[in-house]
Amino acid sequence: MMRHTMKLLGQQARRIQPSNIAPISIRHAGTLVSPLRNNNPLLLRIATALDQKTPVVQALEQWREQGNQVKPSDLRCIIKKLQDSEHFSHALQISEWMSSHRVYTLFPEDVASRVLLIDTVLGLKEAERFFETIPETMKDYTVYTTLLTLYARNNNTLDKAEAVFEKMRDLGFLLKPTPYNLMLSLYSPLKRHGDVNNLLTEMEDNNVEPDDLTANHALLVYAAVSDIKAMEKFLSSNQRIKLEWGTCIDMAKAYLKSGSTEKSLAMLHRTELLVDCASRKPAYEALMSVYGDVGEREDVYRIWELHKNAGSSNEGYRAVISALSSIGDMEGAEVIYREWELGGLPFDASIPNTLISGYHALGMERRLRN
Image (cartoon, rainbow, N blue to C red; front, side, top):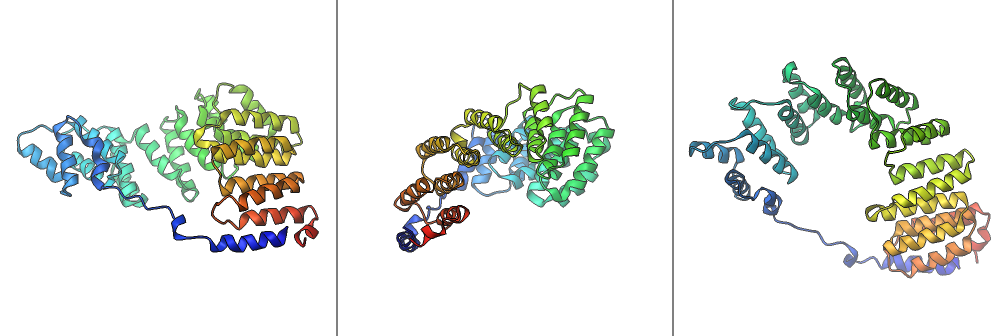
C-alpha cells in the first residue's frame, strides 16, 4: 500500500500547475466609494474628488467658498463612510480639518474617532502622542476605551493596557462590559486564571452584567486550565449567554481531560447546534478531532459526511485521518486517504504524514513496508 502511496505522492507533487493558482481579483478604486454616492451633494462632491484623486480637504474648502454650509453631521457621516470604504487617510484629513477650523463643537466621540484613524494611518506611537494632547475634559469613557482597544490588540502592550484600565477605574468608567472584555481578551490567551477571576469579581461588585463576549473569554480560560468547577459555576450563573462553538470545543476537551467523558460528549453535541454556514468547515474539523479523542468512531464518520457536504478540503482530510488514527481505525483512515489521493486537491505533505504518524503510534510500522 505504501509503495503505491509513495508513487502517487510523486505524481501529485508534479501535478501542481499554474492553473491551480487562484486568479487575482482587481477592482477599480472608484467602486470603493460607492457608499458615498447618495442624494447628499457634499457626499457626492467628496466621492468625485476621490475618483479624480484630488484632495478631499480641497473639495471641502471649495464647497464653503461657494457659500455652502458644512454641517458637523455631514462631516461625521463622510468620515464614517470613508472608513467603511478603507479610505483611512482621507478620513483622517477630514477629521483634522474639522478640528482645525474650530467652528464646530467637538465631542469626545470625534476625538476617539481621530485616535483610531491616527493609529490606522500613522501608527500607535502617533496615536499615543495625540492622546496626550487631548484636554482632560474631553477624555471620557469613549476616548479611554478607544485607547484601551489599541493596547488590547497585542500582548506586547499589556502593561499599557493595564495602566489605562487602572486609570479608567480611578475615573469611575468601569460601568460597562467593554473595558473588562478588552482585558479578558489579553488575559484569556495567556491563561491568567487569577486575573480573569479578579475581573469577574469586580464586574459583579460594580453590577456590570457579563455579556456573551465576557462569558466566552472566561470559559476559555477555565477550560484551558481545566478548572471544571469554575467553568460549571459560571455556566450555571449565566445560562442566557450565547456560547461560541470554539468555546464549547475547548470545554469538551477540558471535560475529557478531567475524565468526564459523558460531559465531554454532551458538550460536543451542544457544539454541533452552534455550527452555521460560515463556521462549518473549521467547526467540523474540530469536532472530528475531539470525537476521535473520545473514541466515538461513528460520530467521526457522521461529522465527516457533513464536512464533505460543505466541500472537500485538505484540512478536512487531515482532521478525519487524524481522528480515525487516534481511534485505531487505520483501515478506515487508509480508505479516506486513497479518496484524497484521487480527489484532485492540491498536494499537502501533512496528510500522508498524518497517516504515517498513525501507523507509528499504533506500532504498525510493518504496514509501511507492505
